[in-house]
Image 1 (cartoon, rainbow, N blue to C red):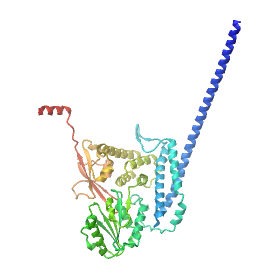
Image 2 (image 1 turned 135 degrees about the horizontal axis):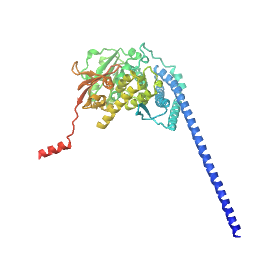
Image 3 (image 1 turned 90 degrees about the horizontal axis):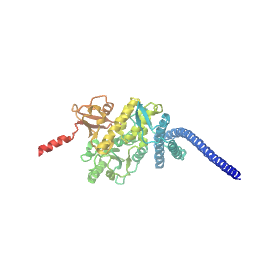
Length: 497
């Protein structure tokens, strides 16, 4: 009896154990199946994302080529329609945003989407401003592509209207044939200024129309004005083009003017011109020049726009997308950036750190173009980063902001030989010292490290574009003041007691 009950319990226990094993096996099998399915789906998703990213980058290249051709054609025609100019601005902004994405992720794709590249041995350089996540990259490329596709929505109508616009004549020395001596961008603003200057209407009292051009420090206002003045239609319309410095409006030289249609370019470097002085000058032009004469004011002071008789034209710094594109074009010259993906990334990082400085862009792009070597570009990048970080640590400001304000900039990092002293850059304005006063050097000399820097010298940069502005600064090596050691402090304290 007992034996049969024991056998029954054993059978029941065995049956329960068997059912439990089966259940656990089923659960484990289901989990494994789900994990395998999840892994397969993620693999397919990543594969599709990779293919989609490649396809989107290629689609982005083709679309940029198409839109850029239209924009280049528009820049070669006179557009008087304000709506067309607004659309041209939209297309221009769209293509540089597209190039910004393409120039970031195109080279990254070539080097394997790493956030850093090896220089030599364990030495690496890190890049900022982009995501190495495949998902984030795919989304950003897709977003740029969608924006470009949206910008082309009304491009057919724009092209049709463009054919009715007069074509500009190209001189034998077209800027498209040169690398670093052409004005980049500003086409919409340039067209607007030309339209204002070509208008026949003028005020009832017949005094010249006044157009203010206002922009920040060293954003290219004078180069922009010279570009307008060199236009064939402007030179044909105005018999005389005269450039006047702000201080000359108080004691104007009547012999410079004649009774013909005249375009007067006035550069006001300070905002201390009062209303009476200006209106006397403005009224005097009525007697000194012919009918239809006009005045253009160039200044960085917003309050001087009150002298304008038409709406001001604002010249801003290039957007980061425009600036990076221009830096790439000037740095590589006739070379293809696609053949140098590492250099393209280094150049993009350098352009990001420069904060839109046109002086830095001109100096560095010229130097980099002459040596397409990764080690050299890395050295230049590290030197610029060291100078930037030193000034941020000392004054809390970027070197560009300090230079624009005329403040002292620490450039010690450019000269390893001056480690025992600090090298200070003191901006002296748009003039240079007399002959023989100080040794003269260029930015290229000190950045390349090809010369031993003297204790005091003049640093000079000259624009390659009219009116060929010269900016000079004095560099001085200063011995740092070492704080007294604790022992010396105690000794002085004891002597004073």
